[in-house]
Length: 361
Image 1 (cartoon, helix red, strand yellow):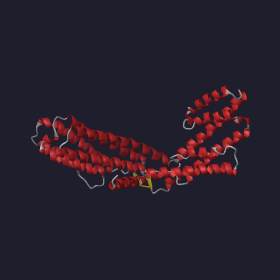
Image 2 (cartoon, rainbow, N blue to C red; image 1 turned 180 degrees about the horizontal axis):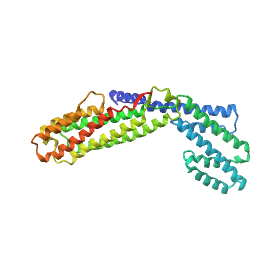
Image 3 (tube, one colour; image 1 turned 60 degrees about the vertical axis):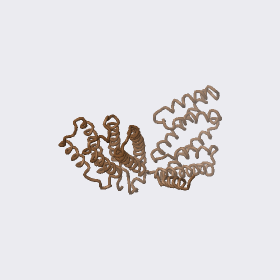
Image 4 (cartoon, rainbow, N blue to C red; image 1 turned 90 degrees about the vertical axis):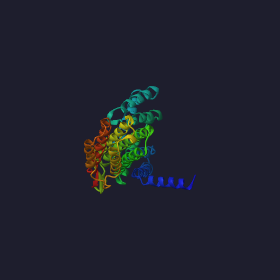
């Protein structure tokens, strides 16, 4: 491997480490470890519970990506464990130990797991019943109590660690993803302008269309990140202390407009793909100003603060000038479609530039 390739890889890894999503993920790993160790020390060293291993296990599963999710799923874990204990105890008291009680316990436990209020942690009903029915845990009431205490310790420890130790508030990942969509869409428009000027074949046009599909995937990820960013603010004390708080509603508005921009870029590519007129055959009175505008629009999309202004007026002026010229009538459906799609992109980028989804909190 050449030194230049190694250096490029190293730079890529370093850029990856600066990603806020990576920071949040690494922090959650540390917090889950701290919560599990803390829960075990309370259960084993302080309370000397016989099933102390359950506390760190539950704590590990309780530290989720958001405070809201930790509380929600932690509460469901406690409820599911209580139901599992009650189910196992009831079966032993009525049927006794054996294959019948085990099968019935699993069947009823898995049915309970499908109950909507327990849907995320409901399988704990069946696993708790399984453990108690196979290990004979219901013979000793102290073990039943220990199991409940261990579960409660794990949940409380996990929630407290997630709540008090830098509670996750990822207000940058969605913003970075929106910026990435801006850049990719802008770069695509500029690439289309450049390759049309140089001469592009059908494979090149199809590559543009594939790129729009790739940007669609980026849009889907941005939508997920916006939902996560909103959830991360729920019940989070850092929300009121953070200087930058994401406005997810505005973020969604921006995302919808960017998605429309991707569709318009794809419309330009589709129009060119289906056209029998190659770009080299376009009338110079249309070709030269249109390609220049396409490049300028791409610069504005990639960086809404780039200082490229007056694009809508320039597109309108181009349409006005061409309508006054004696251009071949057969070309107008093509020219008109391309101008219309480009004007839509300009309108979208103007709307996006006026909407700032992130501000001072």
